[in-house]
Each structure stands twice: as structure tokens, then as C-alpha cells.
Length: 157
Image 1 (cartoon, helix red, strand yellow):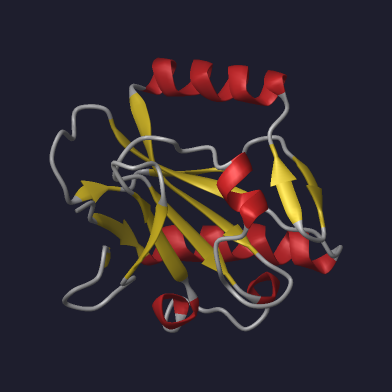
Image 2 (cartoon, one colour):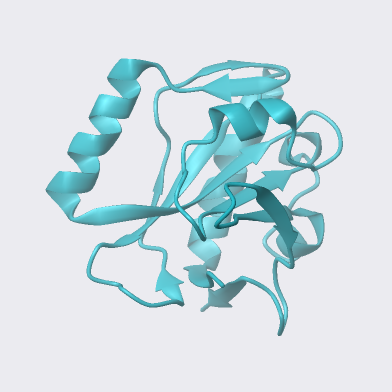
């Protein structure tokens, strides 16, 4: 089971990016990065990374040059991707497009989906709104609890 710790600043930055995309009617994705040296959960999120992306109202994807830039960034900073967080125009769920275009593909990776382009999302209600999924050993996205005692994500002050 993958668990992570993030700060209120991480949540604020994430919400800002998702809302900016929603303001023009497009999904957005950010990646939550942790130090490569963190080998056991809970992984501390130390950076919110917004890759260059192709977006529309109901999908996002990263072009090859964006993936190359991401890999260069990860190597240079000695970081790894622990989770991707993206918005949906309506309900929060992991769609077939999300399955196909997921950036994180390792067992235990987390994918969080925020509804309604994060218009009503705040750090206080982030975990109630987020639909959190974890990639299983069978390469399937399985719904997982977000916050709280049994959740995957804790907030550090």
C-alpha cells in the first residue's frame, strides 16, 4: 500500500493549476514528486510538477518532448513520481482515457482525480472530493481511500 505525506502548500499549488485549466475548460495534470532516496512509504512530496501537456475538456496527454523534459528533471533533482493528480469537468473517477494516458505506471502508483475542474476544491475538502486510485500488480487502477486514518495521503503542516 502506497502512502504519502504532502503539505498544505502542495494542495494549494495543485488546486491552482487544476483551476487554471478549468478556467479555459480543460483538464490539467500535475505530478507529485518525492526524493529518490525515500524507499519506503510514506513518501514525502517535495515538488508539484506541471509538465507541458496537450489538454481538452475530457483528457490530457504528454507529448514526447514533455516526457523527455520530465525524465531530465527527475534525474537532475534525484526525484521520482509518486502520484499524478488531474481534474475532470464533472465527476471524479478513473476513465478509460485516464487508464490509457496515465503517466505513472508502476505498482503502487497513485492517481487522484478532482471533480469539476477543482472549482470548489480547497485543502480542507481535497480528500473528500478526490477519487484516489492505486495501480495494482495486475496493472489495474483500484479505488483507494484518500485521506483519514485508512487513507493513502496525510497532510503535514
